[in-house]
Image (cartoon, rainbow, N blue to C red):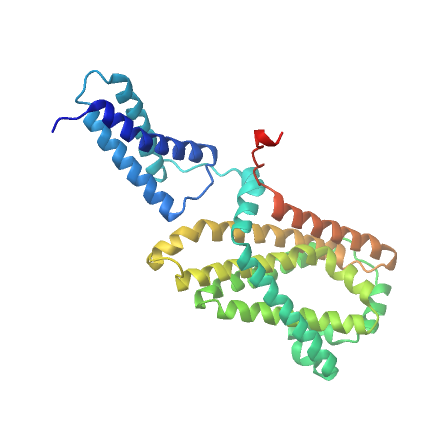
Length: 337
């Protein structure tokens, strides 16, 4: 078959330019994950361009175009096989400022369902205690037996106690971190049971918070409650919600909605996101454990407003960080200037 060279180049250049554009996008956004359709298209363009290169090599007069295609095919090949070479070094600052918040936003629906289930449980707990106050002991776990005490009585005792500075606080902090991490990981891994127990755990923990909130507010101890819970809770609760978010991502992957991929392939696609989310939750819990041990348990009425302000600033900073950090600025439309 005789090849019309000019016509062939004019027709195929559209595909070459498309492949070049995809490579440029991958270079500019190295952490961006391609969708399945994009990956298929990329591989198709790579195969087609490779085939065009073989055809053009039979024409000695097209050396410049041939060199262009050789470079293009080499770049595409490197992109396709980059995971088989050296691993990309972990960059903590980039992970914190870009990877974690962008991964969180990519799965915001799962987070919304996680936080919604928790606060639905909190509403249930408050309503149950309002209808039958004597049922409080039925909702409080044994390890939190001190919460069965009348709030005003506990507050009076706590405010009279001397804060023991750093004595034993490091051990208490480590204990808190370990416990909260277990709860968060358990909330995530129960996603493998199609998310049923993830939702149950979120709802149950919400009930406990709801019971405590109603108990202290109804006894006139709202200021103490806020100063006690907000400093560490502003990081601790979001970490648990992120654990629930990861669990619901696993549950959706188990069901396989919207894809024909096999289960192993589906989990391969979300593996990196799960590790990122649980790593971010772990960092939040480490800080929450430190704050709870060294600040939240300091019950001096003179410092209540300072503690509340500290917790509010933390919560606001976390919301802004997860919502906006790592977003790329939108390109300015020259016509709007």
